[in-house]
Amino acid sequence: LEKRYASVSLFQCRAPLYYNCGQTVNCIHSLYVCDGEVDCPLFGDDERDCIDYPCPENTLKCSDTGQCIRHSLVCNGCMDCPNGDDERECPSRELKCTGNQFHCRSQNMCMPVVWACDGLKGQCDGDADENCDISETEEIFLSPESPETFVTFNMTKPEGTTTADELPILLRSWKVTASKGFYLYAKPVSVGLGSVCGPSIVEISEGGQKAAHLCGDSFPPWRTGHIAAHDRENGSYLIQLKLFNDFGAEEYRSLSLHLWQSVL
Image (tube, rainbow, N blue to C red; front, side, top):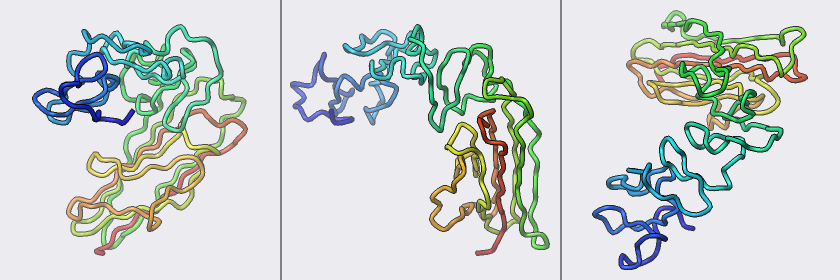
């Protein structure tokens, strides 16, 4: 099916196959009603009143939001219903979570990395995702006299531990601020967060918006090899590292970022 709009006349745009977006000529396939994504651009009415919406065949209804989840997404190890309805009473399996997810062992599910250390309990049984070792944000201020710095992190695998041990998730943060009137730049020097991308990750944000991320042991495809802050008057980067116990046979985790300010 083509996402968003169906190529049928308004006369044909009716249930159970289609849905006419309110007060518009936009017609979408019923499969995209209450699927968790807004497809009616004007009012977003395809995602309203979902609790009472009858889901199409071959879908599962989330009991908390009414969202309709395709059966292909049920019991795939990733929670698509906020309360996890789509991952309950599933046959046992060995999971390999993707880069933006971590393994909730108590439920044998993959959950979004953003849920880890977010302060919300009840997402992973036993709240292993909130078993976090959080350090205060280290603030670094650049100046014309001291225009550059390096953010570094190094950790050796704790002796005698395995990936089955529920070690705390490490959360480390640095805030680097440039002088007024200067641009701020960041470039990875070395990244050693595992042989694969995730779940351990570094996010670099500017003004609350993600500017870049690092994971695994390779550099991201930054075109110039570095990223530059857009705000020349209040340029700053918030660098956050989430480190999970995903060492495996590897012994080390490390990170080195070079940050500097310039008028150009």
